[in-house]
Length: 213
Image 1 (cartoon, rainbow, N blue to C red):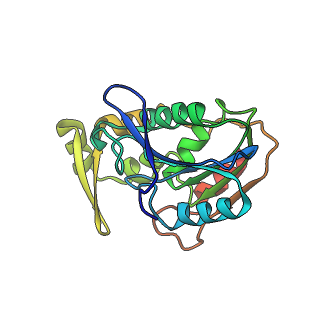
Image 2: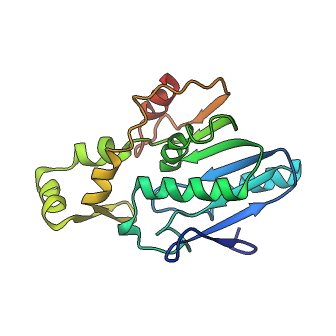
């Protein structure tokens, strides 16, 4: 799936959010939230798009600022800003009922938005969900040396697998302002959480914590 037919949503003069909206004039819209340093081009959103075309259901996917082809620097972004990107786009482009699908960090962004779209959300699907991963999978596991680099130089380039992740001080500190695992979500909706039992990046326990709330 390429960027063909995708558009830009103007959030501010400096921020343009790349998105794709399949409008089938249905009463529901499936919204896909991608992961950390990822984009809307991949097998997961492609599979959902194929399903939506077949079932004639609306589908919205997009890229947070600093990701993919959206404007902005990745190192200036954080959970609060990416949540704001998603919130404004969903409000502007969708009507009716919403089904959120979050991949990794995308589940964190989606859970952040539950209070904003509480009356419209009728279901949630999480894929290797990673809410609060910045603190639990990064900061708490970083060595004293890495923590010192982040605190003094305000950035550390984390080499993991085939990728280098620029982890900034402001990103870590902002993550602490976006805790979701202590907040009970009072919604009677169906939830499906996909998570590999041998996942070496995001432990299965993250999905279990979502079920508890």
